[in-house]
Amino acid sequence: MPGPVVTPARAEEPLVLSLDVGSTSVRAMVFDALGRAVKGYAAARPTPLRSGADGSSEAAAREILAAVCGCVDEILAAARGRSLAAVGSCTFVSNLLGLDARGRPVGPITTYADTRAAAAARGLRAENDEAAAHERTGCRFHPSYWPARLRWLAAERPDSFRRARSWVSLAEYLQAEFFGATAAMSVSVASWTGLLDRRLLGWDAELARVAGLDLGQLPELAGAGTPKRGLKRAYARRWPALREVPWCPAVGDGAAGNIGSGCFDSQRIALSLGTTAALRVVLPGAAPAIPDGLWCYRVDRRRHLLGGALSEGGCVYAWLMKTLRLDEKTAARELAKAQPGAHGLVVLPFLAGERSPGWAEDARAAFTGLSLATRPEDMLHAGLEAVALRLALVLERLAPACPGAQIVASGGALLRSPTWARIIADATGRSLTLSKVPEASCRGAALLALEGIGALSDVAQALAYTGRVFEPDPARHALYRAALNRQQELYGRLIGP
Image (cartoon, rainbow, N blue to C red; front, side, top):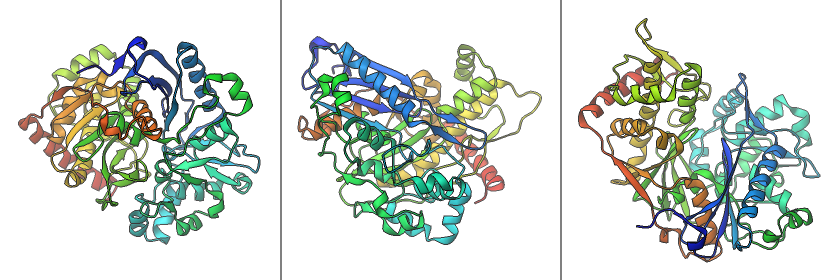
């Protein structure tokens, strides 16, 4: 099987520029008609997010815009002389930005990781039928979604809230900046707001009212087949190669990650492990029932995305490595020889609150069982196992919707730590196949763009590049089942049922 990367000379046209605005970095890559990354045509910039001890997670829209533009500049310089047929994009989702009457931000972007709206989420739960809202929108009342954050903004930043004439995500802000026209939101991005009726594919009027909005303050909804053309004059001068190239509406990075890793249908579950972690499956057809603790978003108007996401993932590894001042090589060596649970610790890894499956928005991390014998490496091992156990809980709920599905894993955290991949396979009791695609979300946005312009009749035509397989060890799995019981007992004592 050919690899997922191709040289410029062997790339098959049409070529697509793909932008992935993630919570860690902004990436731009070029893919060919077969969904292969074109070697040498890649750029990246850090995403300028700021987090605070108060639970804030924010970014300045103009700073992210500058990072995106820098990546596009670099790509076009590298690909000079090659024509691009389309631009596809995805962004980290459930971010929220208010715009004034002239389309200018009234404050910073708040992200899914902002937990300051925890009390507002509890208020929504007390005043409304959360089960009914979950069934309509696929989302719970939680600070990671718009209704709670809008309530928090109205109470804590009333001047900015009143000045906002419209509420958008980063994707629509970038679209308006580049094209100057009224921005339209894809149903994919809209499904992550907590305000979209997932069956009717329209804004939920009742929840908009509860959030303090008029429907006119929300963007119009667009389909993947309705690209924008004709850059504003300043950008047309800056990027003449993209002047009339179609820009497809951005999709959620989770949806793009499934497509990019070859998880197009119910035969494959995508596991992504980057800053956060998620398990997701694409289901075509009628809107599926949502198991307790999970969510249901959209890839587009004909495909659903069922799954669960953790606020914890690679951020737990990064925080422990930094806080404990561990050496990466030494830590990797110690992890490789560690036995399940040998450290004697029980950990709740909620450094940024909890999403799936318990949705305890103000949960905090806890390490129990520490003793004078506990080493920093033990704490790191316990933290990685704790994330794996939370993924096992999500998989238990997701598996009935896709029985026998193969798990395909992607994300830099797993590529850097094969030991963590083994831990997850043992904790879930399922074989885990690593994707060979280096940037699954970026590739997924490109494949959806190729489908959107008709170069692919269906993204399922693209190859799924897979590599190493980790098989679970029955004895280790039994140890992890016992560890999960201990974790759930601690969860019940500290957080609740």
